[in-house]
Image: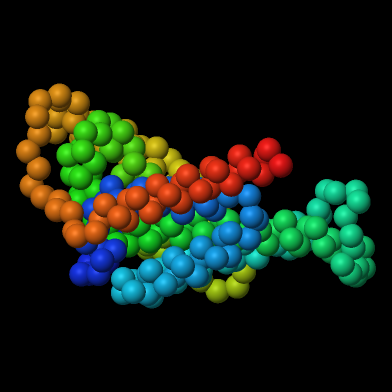
Length: 260
């Protein structure tokens, strides 16, 4: 199985920033997204992240992964929350047949969808402009433990790994005569045939990967030699300061909203 890589090579500023700076910036965006009290913050962050992806030259991959993959699920969330909002005092926007669309439900679904979309955009953008090996080397160089570094890398790479695993399972199922294309019912049956092997195969792969890492001396505490040298670009410290500012702004906004 050939594991996909979301990383797209480039020479933009987003590519040249060190992985640690990108992770701090990602935390800043997430802080504004989930902690800052203004509920429409995500609606501002998504265009900003899209602009960064465009300037970095990864807009096409960014759009295909974030919007095409997430929008069907977010559309379902919008429909469900609009029709079945639990508030008793909710205002009915309009009704049809036995259903009633609540204004509060539409607003809640829109805010939640934008926040999820912004969160996915942050993590996808970091992966598109950061090579996993460079990120691991930079984090360990700055004093992070190898175990913590591996957890971060594995979390960020779970999406491409599952995509590659699913593709290999579907290819194997097709070779056995399973129909995976066509009408909705045919696709639904193929999905059921995919879920079981995907879950079991992922669990088995985790165990195999743990054994492989130990055989390569993953738990050794001796000083390590890094093949990749990570060099900071000019002005990178200012980017980190701005990122920490976003984190503090999100926390301060939440504290002020709580006190008021």
